[in-house]
Image 1 (tube, rainbow, N blue to C red):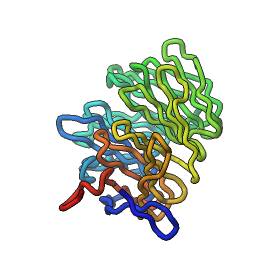
Image 2: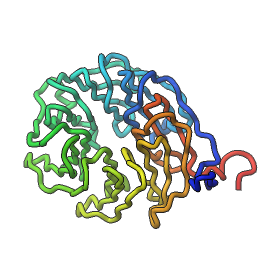
Image 3: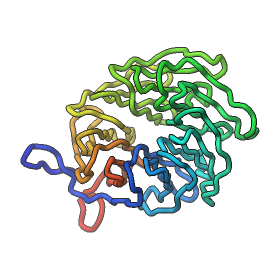
Length: 315
C-alpha cells in the first residue's frame, strides 16, 4: 500500500519502470490482449513515432516509422499481429506488428485522432477532425470505406463494441458518448456526461465502459448503457482505467500524479509521483498486476498494482 506524505496524500512505495525513447509527449497507451507471446504495449506520441513494447517489462521492441506528424492513436488487433495508427498527417496506417512494415496508408482529408480494429480483425475504424467515422474492410483494402456522418465536432475516440455491431464515440467539443448502430448507420442512444469525454475503455469482455470527463470517472453497463457507478475526483481526469478483478481504478490528468482508487468507496489507495507533466493516458495491463501511464514529459511509467508483494521480503 501507499504511505502518506506531509500533505496527507498517498504515495506509492515502489519505483515504477520508466520507459524512455519518445522525444515528445505521450498521448495514448493501449495494451494488447494476452497472446501466446505475452502482452504488448503500444504508445502514441506527438513525435510521430509509435512504439511497441513488452507490456510486462517495458522493453522496447520496435518503432513504426513513416508518419509525418503527431500520432494521436495506436492500437493492436486481438492476436497482436497487426497494428494501426492515427495521425495528424491526415492518414491512418496499417502495420505488420511483427516486422514493423507498413502495409497500407489510408488517406484522410484532415487529422485522424482515433483508430480501432474490430474484434474479428476484419475491419478498421477511424475518426477525427472530419467529424466522420470510417470503417475499412481489411479483406478488400482498396475499397471505399463505409462512412458514418453526424458527429457534431471532432471525433476524439471511437471503439467497436457488442460484437462489432455498435460503435462508441466521443467528441472533442460536445458532451456524451454516442452509440452508433453499424447496420443502420444511425445513433441509437447517447450516454450522458457532464463534459466532453476524453477517455473510453471497454472491459469485462465487453460488459463495461469506463469513461473520463472533467473530474468524473463513470462506469457504464455496456448492455443497457446505464451508469453503474460515478466517482467525482478532486482533480481533473484525462484518462481512467478499471481493474474489475482487484476492484480498483487508476486515473491521471493535469496534476501529474497517477491515482489508484478503490472502486467500492472511491477512496484513493495509492498515488504514483514522478511524471514531470500532465498524465494523458493510463491503462491497466490485462492481468491487472500492473498499469501504465503516459505523460506530457515523454515518458511511459509502468507501476505495480501490489508493490508490497514484489521483490524480496514484500508482505
